[in-house]
Image (cartoon, rainbow, N blue to C red; front, side, top):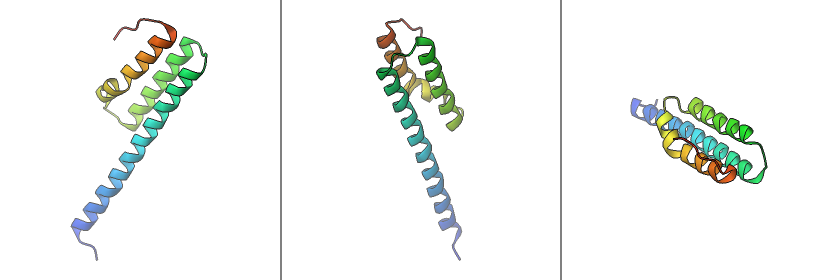
Amino acid sequence: MKGPDVLERNSLDVDQQLENQKIKRLRTMVDLVVNLLRQTDMPLVEAVRLVRGVRSQALTLFPGKEQTYDLLYAPRFARLLREKYRITLED
């Protein structure tokens, strides 16, 4: 029979694995959308829709982490949209 310490460690390992999977999924999604925006000539409206979709999915994966998204990913997308569409975005 396993003791409580072993069960707690296993639970932490599983939690960490799930968290890592969510992080990997978000990184893949962000990279995919960044590459899609760079390589296609989609209208600005569609590009903004994709960026909003990434944010929505990120917050589904990580509820309550709006500030983290806004620090890590929003500037990357804003810079890309500014460069590609030659627009000025309000922060």
